[in-house]
Length: 503
Length: 92
Image 1 (cartoon, helix red, strand yellow):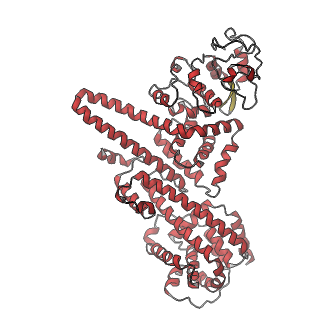
Image 2 (cartoon, rainbow over the protein chains, first blue to last red):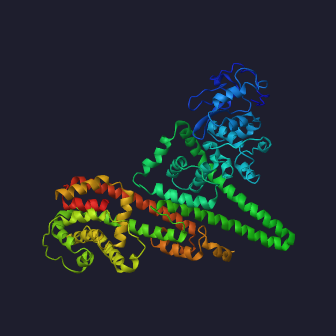
Image 3 (tube, chains in turn cyan, brown):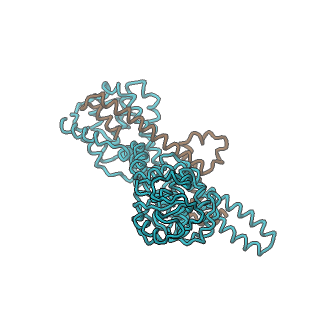
């Protein structure tokens, strides 16, 4: 390896790895091979994830690389050492490693807390193809500028999940690893304000999703929205499980790095992405300013004010976009890319959630009373589905001919196969009156639910309205269809079928 | 500038002023915090969206909570009873 280990004190003549502790340079970072693979000189053989494989690479620039001979001399030693270190495309890795990792000092040393992996990642990131200069300054502000980077040629490094998240992949281009990781990076930036659960989602998605194209905000929003809605909204109940799982699922190395990264991310992700955005804006602004300066000072002042306004406007837009994405992820089965329709769906979803909660709370509160009320009224409800609400509201309970209990489970079962109705489709016109009645009745009943037995009568009607096979009310069906997506009710389904067969 | 933006509003990444107004007015009904805000006409879109997200999460939590309670109730009730069926319906 042609590392210039000039500055490396030579005390580690016994390479032989392992005793990183013996090395003075090991003080920098006690790197332990994550997967327990060989540590070369014990110095800083960092295990990196590369395309799902582990790559050993020496972290410190000063670290002496080769086992046998003193660093500067051996060009022969490194390649063999490298060869069995690198499990992957040796051509890229080895060529990269051959290059002097000079100024990785500043580069690595700053690196955020869980030094090891990040720094190694940093180094690797440095190896990425010439990053656009515009990218670097903003990143430099948050991280130490890898100034010498352009000088050292590094072949593209792929899929270093860890580091690329931190660093270069906001540039998004050129790196195959970049996309997948930067996607998570980018997404995290948007969700910094969101719950910690988000990070796990991102982690999970990082694993699951392969590399995309370049990262750009628009595609990010689309993909995140789609993916987010799909995975997050999928099972609300199991969300806690979902969030923790990804961390455990990841292989040890990745998980530790990811976990460590997650600490950093909240600080850095937003800054990095914001910087990236700002850089874009600033790039645009600079060009605008240059043009305006040509025109004269007065126009420049006005234009500067306009630019300031532009900037603030952009920031506002970005904030709104972030929130929109977060909202989109909360809504199950939201595949709308259009903001307006997404907002409409959000509103519908909220209504259905509210309705569902009302029903459930009434059901909870009324359980003790159901015994008395149900037997009389249920059969009737089984008969007069669509009119259930109205009848309950407007007329005294009709005399209950007791039809068998059968119809009820049938209806329960029949509701399930119902495809999710186009909630906003033809329904509003048809049932314009119904929702209002439902709401009206809900609002009436809620205060009374605990008071009179009559209210107990009302509530079952509300429920069974939703069961009507031919005319599922819009909101009721929404309420039912939403929870059916989110709740794992396999046991209940089996019970229901059991109920059906037995009764 | 706003004109320019509204012209660009056709793209998915832009939201028009009309949309925003519509959103805000609709969400006001759900968000008591916004309703009670003193200067309700000045609520920013991002705030509204944030409140909406919070509200939805709150609703989710409540639904989960209620489902737990209903499942407990379900266990306490006869399997084939009508109450059980009702509860299952609710839990669906």
